[in-house]
Length: 224
Image (cartoon, rainbow, N blue to C red; front, top):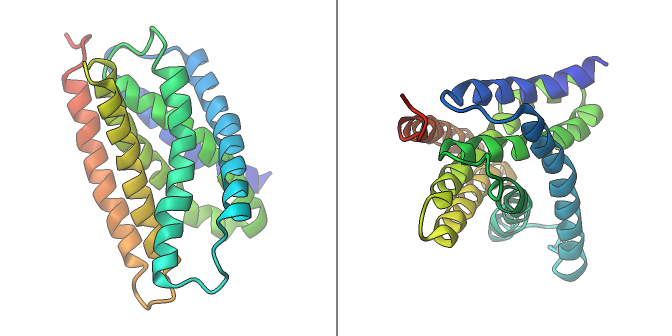
């Protein structure tokens, strides 16, 4: 029970934070909950299928080089996981009438990402224990939220743009870029001190995320 609480607490803290940041026209809690569940179910299913396909047809050797770790970080892990989240935001959230201000792109992307992160976090924490729970609470879970804000910022712009495809794809590519950068520095941890790059990319992403949230708050159609 303690591990379950430790694994899910950072998820719900992040959800509450972004719900509070939705200042002017809050989304339906029921729809947000459904988006979270879709993130947990659909994203995990899509990710599992794509990982299985990749392992069968394009397996990487066991003795990864730095280049192979780069490919794994950006073109396997980041691409597959962010694409699986993108599908839910694009084809469920973005089509809803309630998606009616730019910030909605951020909060829906975060809900999908937290659904995905909840399942992933439970798997790691139940295997690794409390130490893993505490480490991921300040690294991997906030990182997933940051990737979502980057994606959601541009997908929020897309809904109200004449060039929706462009902004949606920029959102997807932005999330892949930050996710890949974060993972790459962790994957090449065999180089002494290089893992600090993951924390630097996380900090930069969080700073940009805060600016993205503020920018969409300022242009809300419901701002008094």
